[in-house]
Amino acid sequence: MSTNNPIGLFDSGIGGTSIWREIHELMPNENTIYLADSKNAPYGQKSKDEIIALSEKNTELLLEMNCKIIVVACNTATTNSIKELRAKYKVPFIGIEPAIKPAANNSKTQKIGILATKGTLNSALFNDVVKTYSNTTIIEQIGSGLVELIENGEINTPKMFQLLQGYLSPMVAANIDYLVLGCSHYPYLIPQIKKIIPNSIKIIDSGEAVARQTQKVLAEKIGFNLDRKSSQLFYTNINPAVLTAIVGEGYSVCKKDF
Image 1 (tube, one colour):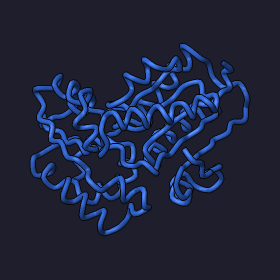
Image 2 (spheres, rainbow, N blue to C red):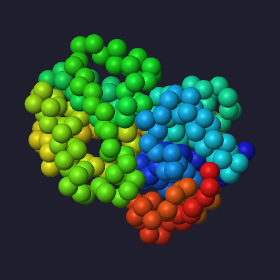
Image 3 (cartoon, helix red, strand yellow):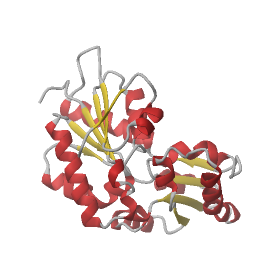
């Protein structure tokens, strides 16, 4: 496998571009291919078997495109399928999990909030992590409807603000000092979230840590792109307009059936 082969990423839609952004910022010379499986969003409402099947479908498409490493840029897909993916395919996988560890270790109130999908919060992997922080009160909230609104381009709307307010206000009342965003879609909601919670509550997600881990695995196992130029390709199986609006003009965004 050539070290110049691309980094592959997939998510249940456009949210994983928050992970792509961190990876591209850290390693701008790397080629990347991103799959937005918006047709099947949100993964958080699906069964474990369905999530595994979708994750395998996305993985096989990225392997057909000669990706040298695959980033599962979706909390729900990671917590429900990464064990199966690593057992089935030889390519290295990087997963994304809610950043509970730094929140719990740094919390002064010993109370943290996590906003995530049903699929992530109900997963065995997530619950195993939660058990290791028994001294911290973790207030879990399913972000029902948030991914759908983001996928429809309705980030800065009254409906989004109303949903977030309903989800976050009880956490604020419970005296959390960290809010963990447990879905790769949710970093795009940070401006809205900051209007609801006080400045004393720190917001954290997994993007930067995922980028560093991807860089580490490339350095140890595969190698980096040696060309000075790099390409960033984005594929979606629904109207590419929303994905284009998220990543910005100047990138190649194509519709593809998968």
